[in-house]
Amino acid sequence: FLQSICDTPLRGGGRQRSGKSGAWFWFSSDNRYVVKYITRSERQSLSSLLARYLRHIRSRNRTYLPVLCGAFKVACRGVEARLLIMNNVFYGAQHFDDRFDLKGTTEDRFVRGMSGCETGKDLNFGDRKIHIPGPIREELAE
Image (cartoon, rainbow, N blue to C red):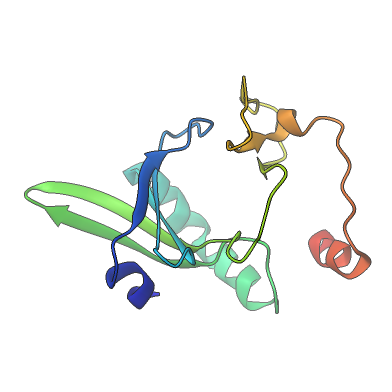
């Protein structure tokens, strides 16, 4: 992942309007990785669940969660930033009709005036139904 992140300039550097945290996101030029700015408290939360997360990732051949590659603190001219690098779960996808960030809660989970390029939340998903093939459905149920 270091070659993808370090050898060419990152793309993006913007905020997802629908995101609650207001975090900044960048993408590697090959689109394989996402770099997310995280706060100190997000870093601490991540640390508290890391052991369970790693057990989950290692116990499966395939996962639909992003695979965390590293968390870094970078300092430049006295300014510090905490960055989380993860694989892009949408890498290789050709086209999306819609995209949703589903967390399984309804609290603050609606994007008003959602345009086609934004990521919707749980309440934007509404009464939609999706078909998930049997083997994948079984994996998700675990």
